[in-house]
Image (cartoon, rainbow, N blue to C red; front, side, top):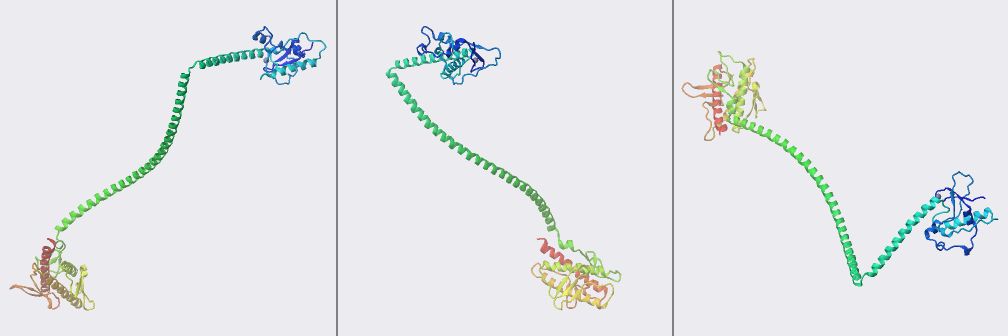
Length: 432
Ligand SMILES: [Zn+2]
């Protein structure tokens, strides 16, 4: 006969329903339905194992004629709700059988999360799972029963004690919560303080680095200044040495050397004057006049004297005097090589003016207790220098109406007077 084909809803194996299954298609009479607990006298296991009466066969051949499974949702798998109802009655159509079977599977699927039908293997697995669940549930039930008995066995005192303990524990919990809040607040404060401290540390670090740079800069400057100071110390010591040496040095004696041993007196080895036997160039005489005028100017400055009537201008072999009264006339204290009456006259005027200045210095220097003493008197008006003593006389400083010997003698006496002035000024001003 023809058989209805379904697929296992778990493993998708095709199922072949046997005739006994097909009998399910018959609408069972309500009076014939068994109780959900299975047939009387049957253990639950027997009820389960008698399952279904659905003999399913796996189709080993890939039968192409497959029927779609029932389209209803399935849940529930109460095996005991299936009953074998004997032989399939004749006269039933395939359609009604399919319809009845589908109805059965829909009903089963509505009872559980699982869809039906299932193959034999999947059914076995499902049963094992349900057994395990049942065992666990029974164990839980027994535990609950035991707890209930234990609770009933607790005395009133014990309960009160436990209640108090519970209350205390709750109070303790509340206290600990408050403490936890405080600790949390403290932790936040500490974190804020830590952040502040870190910021401050960063700032201080920056300051420290800046100070370090400043310190290095200052140290560098100090080293440079130390070097400079050392250099200045050396310079100072050198200057002090020079100063000591200069203080011991007589500037006038070092600068001006006057010698009068021979017939001609010299100043700085320059002869001032000339003799018929000892001709001297005018250049040398002019230069000697330059040295002599420099000496007189230095002496006058030492005693703080400003000359009247003339200004002395030492210029080597071109020295001259400038009249302060007579329209600034320049009087040359030198002579050219050519013997010229005009130049001699000018030279005579200059030498007279020089003698005037020398007389002014003499008068200034003779003031006071330790005044200067010049051995040879000056007669400025006549331009004479007087040599005292028996063999002495008057010697004119002019060249006009004069001899070379007389003139040279006058110049020599003048230089001797200057030599005395040098000694005096050295004692008075430079060896204090
Ligand atoms: Zn299966």
